[in-house]
Amino acid sequence: MKYLIARVKFVWRTRGIPGILLAIWRRIVFYGFVFPYSMAGHLLARRFRKPKQPDFSFRGRTYEYLYHPHNFTWNNERTVEVPIVWESVRSAAENGKRVLEVGNVLSFYYPISHDVLDKYERGEGLINEDAFYFRPQGEYDIIVSISTMEHVGWDPPDEPEPEKIRGSLLNLKRALAPGGEMIVTMPLGWNPEMDKRLFSGELPFDAEYFLQRIDAKNRWEEIPKGKARGSRYGKPFHAANAIVVGIIRNP
Image 1 (cartoon, rainbow, N blue to C red):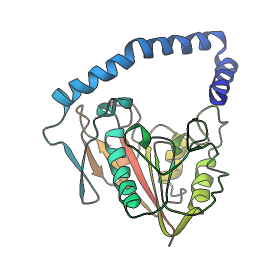
Image 2 (cartoon, rainbow, N blue to C red):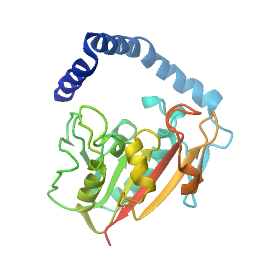
Image 3 (tube, rainbow, N blue to C red):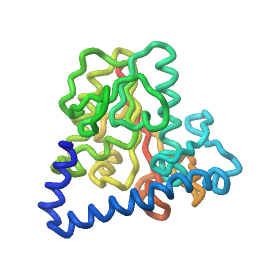
């Protein structure tokens, strides 16, 4: 509710009554048309859009594309982000390691038991704190984040703070146990300030890997950093056309 009120205030302040009416109309369209389309689209996508080769490669490993009705994964970057991150989370959980997820994403696709840090979303077991100020009660062996950090210090209701993403990553690094690892996926082109800092080397990643969408069937391939530079969000394909998978380690 707090997040909803903040959103309404932001829209009122920046767009006035027309903005409020547009937001209401979008909700009507979503629940009346988009959600039913999501379920139907999921079934049709699995039958007609799934590539003949249902796998993709990343860092020498093979993953299966994710097809799921939540968030239309057959037509965006979730189809690769979630499998990559989930494999690490699943393996860590099976070995009794402590896991923290920043941004509540995986619970929409799999049953989870790990801690979830999400500033705005409300729900059982969610930690409603800002990643920039978060102080955990203990250390984590693995921290993951799927398409969340690009919103930090950029999207409303937050005020623009371009440096906040770097500070948040450094703060989260302090929560890593010795030998721990953080895996962060972010779409390119959504937050130009994030992109600028990523390609200038200002973000505290120890390693960076990039994937690019290559066709309308939502197939992806790993590419070098230089090829990812300048990727646009929403062009030529829907949503992200390239993503970064950033790794931060605590030696």
